[in-house]
Amino acid sequence: MKISMKLAAFAAFAAALPAFAQIKINDNLSVTGWTVGSYHYLTTKGAAPVQNTSSDSFNVDAALLGATITPTKDVTGTISLYYKPSSEGGINGTGTEEVTILDANVAYDAGNGITITAGKYLSALGYESYYAISDNMITLANQNFLAPIPGYHTGVKVDYAPDKTTTMGIGVVDSLYGANATSTEGDGHLEHNFGTEGYVQYTGVENLTVWAGAGYDSKGGPQNPNHSVYVLDLWASYQVTKTLAVAAEEIYKDGGKQPFGILATDKGSNWLTYLQYNFTDKLSSWFSVSGEDVSNATVAGVSIKGPRYYMLSVSPAYAITANLSVKAQYSYTKFSNFTAKSANFFGVEVGFKF
Image 1 (cartoon, rainbow, N blue to C red):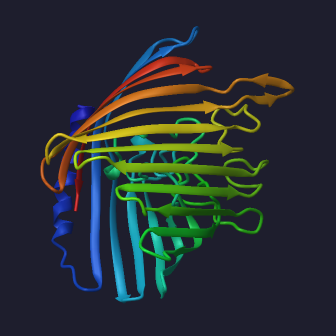
Image 2: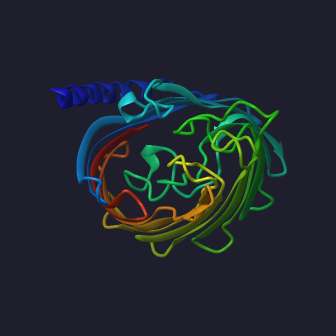
Image 3: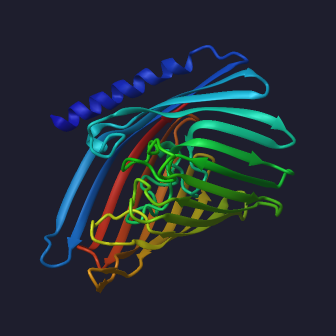
């Protein structure tokens, strides 16, 4: 009964979305949106004395409705509403809130390749998408322990494109990392702490994109009030042929999230490799090998090893229409220095966008 009720809720929500697509769009207004629902099944082999476990879930994972307003050719306003059900942790990770405003910003095209944006916006860091509808797979290839990629924050940034092959940007925000587990907002303060991030992207070699960025949270940030946090991120993607693409990313983070509540200065690295192959115009698949290594830390004078893992994943996807798609994923994860030895994940996801 519980599963059938969730299925009915998802069907009703998805059925309502095409009505939004019928909203009249004029020269000054555009509307977009998406929703994603999925079934997950997870088995975990525990390290003694932890027991082996299995669990499943069937939910509407998330939804977004956004609008872009262009009152003049130089000014663009963006606002979006984001929904994540309490069964998935909600928008704050605790399940107590389900809806929030994600984007709320105004961008000004100053000319000569310079764009100034102020308000609430998504971090530029990270190869994988923040949005479930745009993810290569159902789950992310990293973010498990260190969670090195920021989400949304509030501030001011300047992007500069001196030519057609180079783009760079820098911004100052209320905090690099979010004030909640899902990073849907910053901490809202600059006086005692602040964040900053910058990046450079180069596309001067045909079919190749190279991206490098860095971020910094001053002492007193929401993830660690006793230690400043910085992150370095490098990724590249290459379109080998019309049907084959590859990508790789390396991220280093120091002083960030403390998922076990005992690591005084968590630091370490994430890495991922992706291969995408398009079998037909509608059928494609992502293949991924990824991992994470949390460095040793000293707690109460005792050196302890942080957790490590590597993950193997395959995620085929089929585009039923331009707006409706379905994907599946199988992942095997091998852990060390952790309460679990290994895990198997299987999922099926349906996504609708307009």
